[in-house]
Length: 203
Image 1: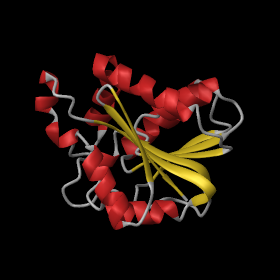
Image 2: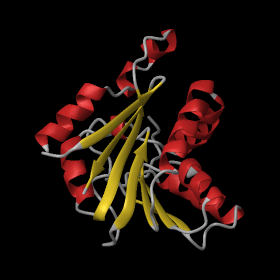
Image 3: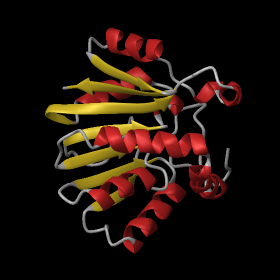
Image 4: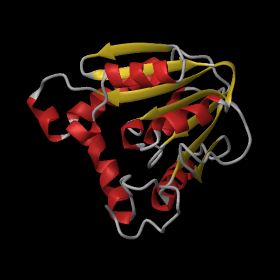
């Protein structure tokens, strides 16, 4: 946990906070083979959706949203993160890539989405497992979807491999996602692929 995350007040008690050190380290993790394959899984899956507006919750340094924007020109995107340091790094990357005319980053969280816009697609990649009030967050997120739109969660599961033993607190299971859907009376389209999982909730 970083001590300089700037006390934005958007973290729930017990959630991991990312400051300057954490935001720099987070970018390095993309070199880990498991995460490279995970990001490829997400990018392939997101490509199947139709959307003109996208919200990335827990956007971190902006890698995923900016990667989508680099390959698809016909949408506007917003990434939100409770870490000011993450938002600053993402904004800088967007500007350098010349995408800041349609991709923006703001301070926010799953429980505090800035503005009052609705979206055609809302997703979270490797963020959902950090959330403490998941059901409360999902309820609010579903209200920010346009008709027929999806909220999609991308996470890593326990595939039994040795390295998963060290990150158990960062894993999500099909059962956990199905339980959340059941309690909220939502239908979840769940897909698993080689240790990665996607759950899509439709409005």
